[in-house]
Length: 146
Image 1 (cartoon, rainbow, N blue to C red):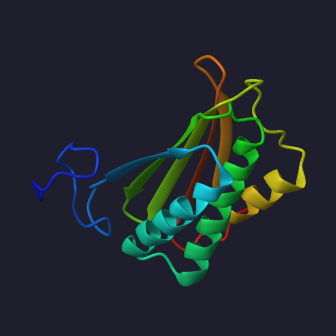
Image 2: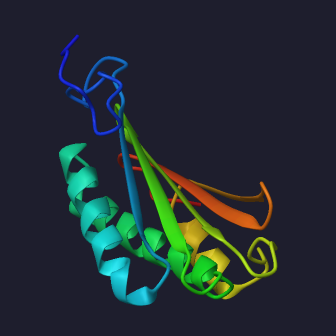
């Protein structure tokens, strides 16, 4: 195993294309739409590193952007949006969370949720602790969503 530390300092960095190695990247930005370009760029970069196709990379960029947009609607002003990327062989999992004014997860009966589900293979939302709302999505290389 490569002893190089990963982004979270756990020492499990390595080639995400083979074996059971995982990389974890945690990014915290202000909960404002002006900063979403940072997450879109990070998403594309990490998906490219994991050898996702150009179509998969674009799907992931749009999915992360859509998930963040769903969360920002009810974000506490001045709060931070946290995004955790977990790379494993052939798979990228993205967890986005924010402190929310109402503590309610986004409705799954909306066009935005339908788009998100179509772009990512797996999508879920959760709440807690407190008023924190989280959306988690995952995509496997070559998976065209639902």
